[in-house]
Image (cartoon, one colour):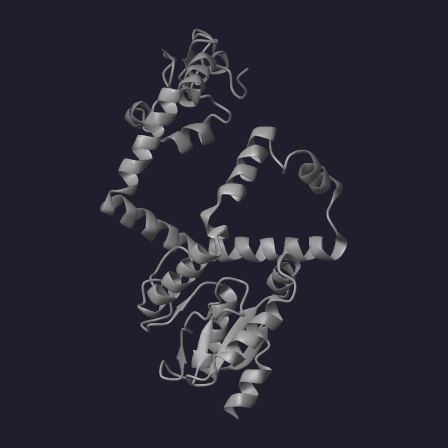
Length: 299
């Protein structure tokens, strides 16, 4: 049932919350749903209303159950899908959404969250999984039988497992990457200053700041590297982080991502180095913001 302040605590004559109706704590009227527009007339927003009357409900239990039933129905799922499709085809909506995501991604709050997450992961990596996390992976992570069946069917019928299709996918990706189609600002890729250089992680940004601010390099010396692949490379394709002086491929990693990739694809780092050398480039590896190799190269 409802928590928080009861209507009669504010005014003894106001009706209590019921299964079908809730009482607005600003004027005592019974409603099935308290909408934002109604609260605005009372001088509140949803946030300020629930902050003032902590725990105050905005929808009755009956209406909530009806909404959940409608949303989980076939027609409800269809309407939701149609709405999302319509929104995703709206250029103005996509622009506003992407601007909002980029604004948050580049904010101090986003950076603080990612740093805290990185600290938790490192502690977990050093001390092992907690009993709670182990229990979650043991009982829930694998999903329901239906989800496992879907995953199995997808893997069995996945077109990308066909060697010919994989080869075409690789060639198309490299062609698009060389034409600059992948170098666009998204919630993952950000543009570095006013250059044509794009980065994804905070480690890559730190490298660019170090190269430009400390070492005095320019866009002539630093650029995004081309995607690489050949018949001997078994991991589809490899897109290095940056290219120095048109000769040195720069790979930037944290200890955690290195461990994760090696665990999922043992030997992938050595495979990348071999591919880079076969393509006529030289290799520089920057791990955990250690720029000693870069310093030696420039000096």
